[in-house]
Amino acid sequence: MALKIQPLSDRVLVEPQAAETKTASGIYIPDSAKEKPQQGKVVAVGKGKKDHDMTVKVGDTVLYGKYSGSELKLEGNDYLIMREDDILAII
Image (cartoon, rainbow, N blue to C red; front, side, top):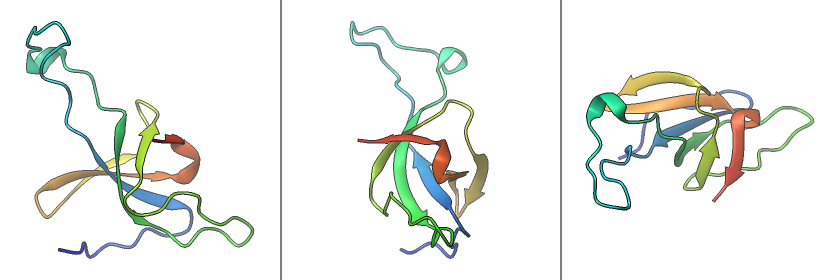
């Protein structure tokens, strides 16, 4: 199912991965103590700027800053839309 949204310029639409519910030692984390996820999958990419081609592509898993981007809800799912500069790394 394709989304009906196309980011403009150097913007990227990212679907955040779910926050961890259990630590490595087996302790369950309550919802109130969960940290905001900092990695996600690229769902849509803008065309880039005149003098800058886009580095990320659809399907890439990326790391981004904790408070990067703007949250939005589309078709029942949560997404972040951010500038490519807010992405720290491709995993």
